[in-house]
Length: 99
Image (tube, rainbow, N blue to C red; front, top):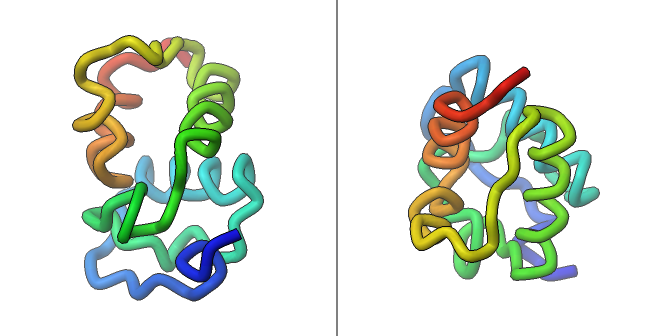
């Protein structure tokens, strides 16, 4: 596990209620050692941001499918944008969720 996943992440912007729910899903599904409310909604999820990797993306996509009732496809050309930040991921979920 990388340092970025275990160190608290300063939340410089307020999370909306849907962002908080997705942050909690992300923390629980990936067993991250950060508090869900400490994730800055604009911070990058992958690489130098939260430090997630491709395996994390697969696990997160599965958790989203279970929780929100729609499938995130690995061949979607928009994945880079969808998974860019907590805010962008939440926006996509809110637009396509079935539950």
